[in-house]
Length: 106
Image 1 (cartoon, helix red, strand yellow):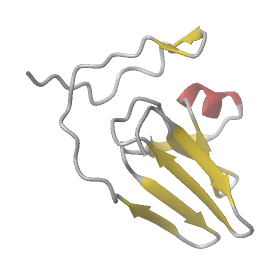
Image 2 (cartoon, one colour):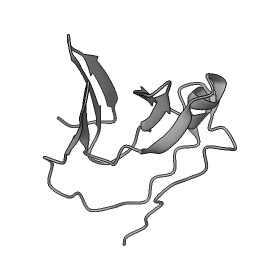
Image 3 (tube, rainbow, N blue to C red):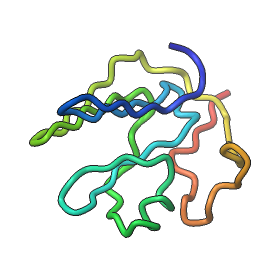
Image 4 (cartoon, rainbow, N blue to C red):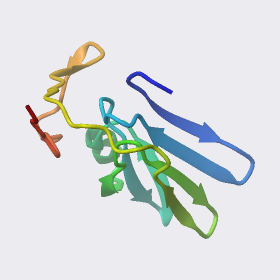
């Protein structure tokens, strides 16, 4: 699948989170009350007082079950290019977000 996306899917006993192979859209993993949660920005975790665990990597599919956390990276590595997103939708990136893994290849 091409494009810029991050998706979260719910099944009866699993939560599936995935991020586009280029990493254009943010997605992070957090903990709240002993369970995993997924959010597009860490400021969302702050609002509900959840603990930030890590960013979901570009191209990563994360499968969260009741007693497991499984990471799959099925996409081939993409060549990095310069891309700096200052806006996500209509609001600017929050100062606490920072810019992670900024790459520039010529």
